[in-house]
Image (cartoon, rainbow, N blue to C red; front, side, top):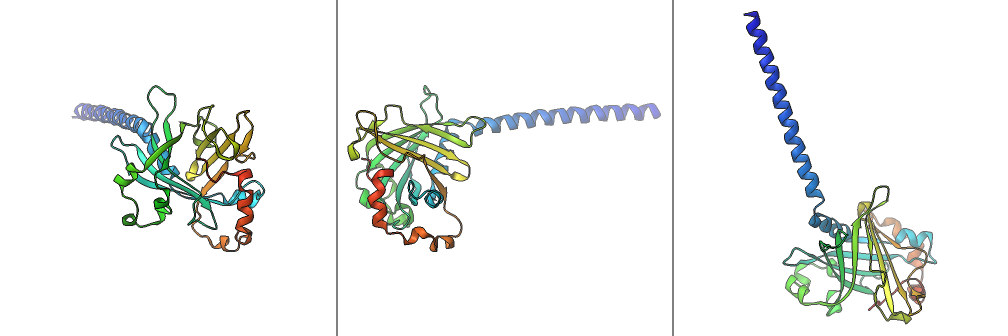
Length: 266
């Protein structure tokens, strides 16, 4: 009896060990699959599209360095989705004081980089056929916006491509990228071409730096102090009500705008 009980106990231990090993193996396989899924090309594209979306401000920079930065509002939201899965976002920028009057409007198309390229996400910028119809698109009820089929029809001139890659270890950003070194054609304010740099950080913070250059390579518009840092709108805006930025004359800002930021970069 005693030896039989010992044999049974030993067999039970072996079974338990085998079960534990099987669970570890299965768990490892599931974890590996999850990790692989989290780094697919389309997951990168979705992460970038989600990070770009929302209402963001450069308020902190405007407070700290008003000579080089304005308090701008950046608003982005989903507009439609293409047949291949590419996301189309509506994007606009305006002065914080006058959000109903955006000075820049774009349609962004977000999708994975072509397989032959060493990047994760391709962000393409397009002009809008009738930009006036899209003002405050994200602030309007969905039934009062241009509908998905209209959005696709209104995608006009291709302006730029920014190729984003996952940031390396030790960097503060999540994704970063830029236009090609030669930039894209641009004739605003004496420029012949322009470049854009974009980085996405934690908590959906977005850094953007747009610059225009003449034929000799001299920068003729865009801030020289560094990128604009757009941070998501705070939960409460009570402190903004008494901000000194509220009481500065908007015309004085607009007169200085061409020295640090471009209103119309068509």
